[in-house]
Image (cartoon, rainbow, N blue to C red; front, top):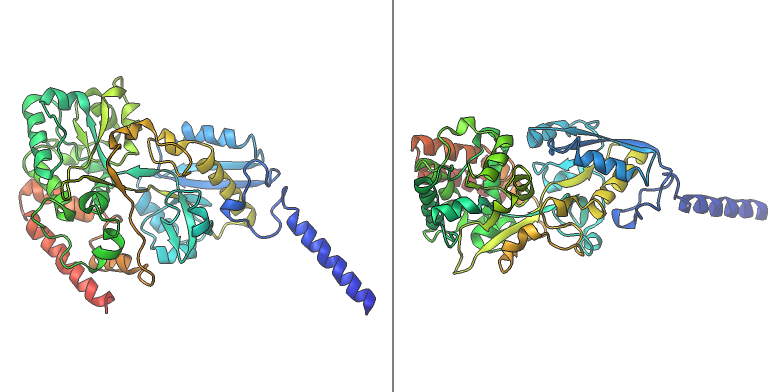
Length: 445
């Protein structure tokens, strides 16, 4: 018996030893994201990562360069990117099957309550948020399932030379001041005052990003108050709230302050056109700044202004995660580990977030110069939902078919209605409110 016990102890010690000697392979459990030491751990790991991305414009350039740099540390890990144009819709469908790939930008259409069904855990949120900004963005019940590729401040890209030529000074701070500025641009320049990017479809989703912090100044609005608010899309009468955001779009189109035919807009060419001064304004997150600067000979003409809403005499700007990196929980252990290591490289070392003009994911990294204009503007990050209500917003949003930040049909309907000047914006949002109320009655007891 003593010999058997001794043999058992030896086997146990050897098992623990080899489990802990995990620097060259993938035996044992997968470490959490914060535990990984880039360039030190698992340097002999062999794996092939199939990575899905929305950044079709940089697959063969910037992303290809990242792969080469990463492989200096991990020569046996290969990464193949697939750029997807209609990303959110396509990936929402793809992840319903287990073998969609190995890593991706997590679609925001996936409810937080369902993240664990599709994605590998990165670790405890309370641990990760000590090092990383917005670590709670793709998290549920204290576990994070993805970290931001970059994070955005929500404002408006504009051509400073065009605004100066039109005599727009100071920059507008309310919806009506903004519409007046667009009218000045139309009257005094040859530039398109506001380019909708309507034909691209996905670009219309940008408008939803302003209805929270930018329009209310309240970090609790989106995830805690909006789900319970009565008629949240109604006109508040003071130029704030969701209505004020959609009012700007509706009136810009109705007053002819956009391109002649929104159905003919072109996403790629708009970058060079705003750089050259043919377009004055694009309503997009800060991720777009660098793309517009690099698209032509006039990078210094590209500016970024606060969204034109003022709350009690003060302007705010929503700030939050862009697409978050995620790993397929159904991939093999080696591939999941390799994917986490590559994402660790992207987040900690690549400088992608900084180079794209966004808020760096690593808290200790500095803000880029492109956000200098937001100095003094209070940035508002959405508070998470209250405990026990993590899926309340998502349930109401889906049930009502309004589709904030996930389905662009409601924003597209604004442009279509404004072109015909029927229905009015008030009538349009009345329908949203009615559907929102019915959904509330189903999910709020």
